[in-house]
Length: 376
Image (cartoon, rainbow, N blue to C red):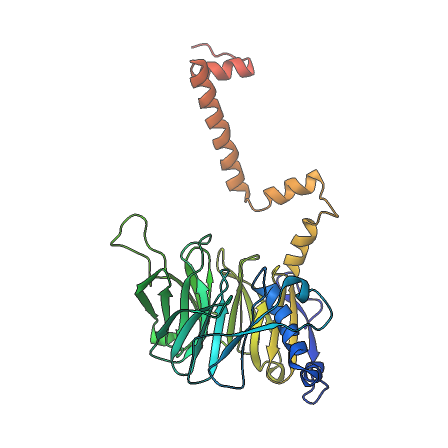
């Protein structure tokens, strides 16, 4: 990484993990299953659920999911505690491939037998179970409103189509298909009020809508592409989205790119050496400041957006900006022509409002305000 990169570049640090290095997690597993399960549960607790902690994990028996229930006081304790184990009542014949939680402690998971099950994590009871036409690659909960309960189960079926299965309207399942020139569906994420951003193997990033139109019951946006662009020339390996910074990150072609979704402008790119670009996955931290990328050959990259750090420092309560800095920050986004037009428009509107309230003409109001007259 070039340490002298400009503000629009990514700043990163790399850590190499050797293949035969000592792995502390393996030692804990040998000491007992509960210690290792507690560690995984704590990670999941901070990322997903609140209140009671539920974690699903594939067991030795293929097709079985077990929920590990741990109260908050146990999760925050450093001691090893015995946790309650509850198997999901949904049964699958083959191994579990993927799954996702929603805020209502509902867990959706799919297996190689081309079935998707939705279970309640509290007691393992089955909410629904559906058969799909291809093995699931990824499952995510979403919703058509940003504030609504996320009860739409979306499934990446064989990297070809995305199934939308609404638990509130089970008879109206939808399947989203894409153009063949995009390639296979690598991954996708829900964002905003019912939108999906998907990354494809041939380098394309596509935004598609799942929203129903409010103006007409016959017209809707479901399945309509809102945006499409090719960010990688040869291939795209992974994609992730962060709600806090409103940015999408992609990796492929031995480089990492960050795109601002407000205007779909590429604001950062970092080229990596081919030996360090055997990408596995990437993800943002919750606050959107750091981006981590893992690789199959042991490389682990951590990147920080410079301008994001500057923005967070400016808004830090420990270093309050001065009035001049606040005014400069407010006026910076406006170009001079836009600023002049805005000021003139505001003055004109205020003048018209005052002349109407005082029941005088605009010219008489200007004469009274500035103390000049004109003889005709």
